[in-house]
Amino acid sequence: MPEPQPQRFTVPPSAAGQTLIDFLGRSLNLSRRQTKALIDTRSVWVDDRRVWMARHPLRAGNRIEITSGGAAAMPRAPIEVLYRDDHYIIADKPPGLLADGPHSVESRLRRRLALPGLSAVHRLDRDTSGCLLLAVDRESFEKMIPLFRARAVRKTYRVLVSGRLPSRTQTLKRPVGGRQAITHLRPLDANRRASHVEVTIETGRTHQIRRHLVSIGHPVIGDRHYATRLPSSDPARHTGRQMLHACGLEFIQPVTGRTVRARSPLPRDFRAALKRLNLT
Image (cartoon, rainbow, N blue to C red; front, side, top):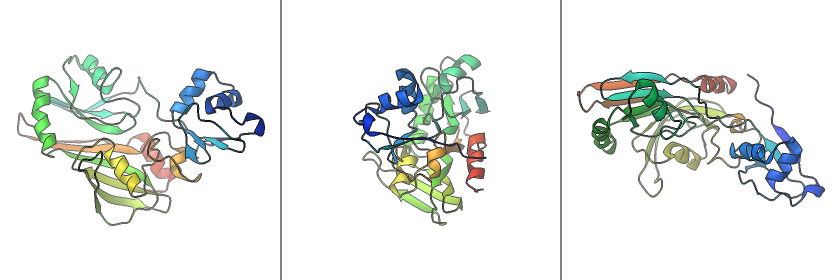
């Protein structure tokens, strides 16, 4: 699959001092609203640094590159139910949807399944896909909280990262937000451009996987927040969303005592990225 071709501009002396939103709007013949939406996808680079401030001032000679856009919200994307019992549902969250809130996986399943008390028990980032646990009522929700606190919920992810990770399994124990965070990495395949990694986490800090991986110099491919400066050849420059997929969830159901296991297959864009990067 060919990589999307970026658009490139060089700021002429006559445009020095213009803001990014004004320069791009004129160069692309877009309205101010359209230009702001483009910048908000974090697909705009100035001199190899990702820039998402609309009023970023430009200098003569600045090199601007626009790569593929981020994963857009997909209101029509189907949401598959991977597991369901009287207390819990595990949904296969598509990228581009929030876990909870308006127009989210939670709100859509509430309507579809006629479960007004349905609530997401944990969170996945908007652009992260895969296993999302929801409780059908408040009592079931509260029963899961001690399991998460006791680290008794096994969460497994597949991740594509920039660069070649060492082939050995490793554990990262670096604080995130001032709190202990533990991430286990098991490389599955790697080359000089990228690595395919299985990740399990013991803690669930905000953006833990993304922050841990960027801290060791291997950001998640497509991460538009933490990977802000990348060479023009980096695969993250041409990926529509962060390549982070919650592929597995396992826990002891607190009401029945039975083991619950759910697996989410790799989504199409993740498989396409593997192929593009010559990884398995």
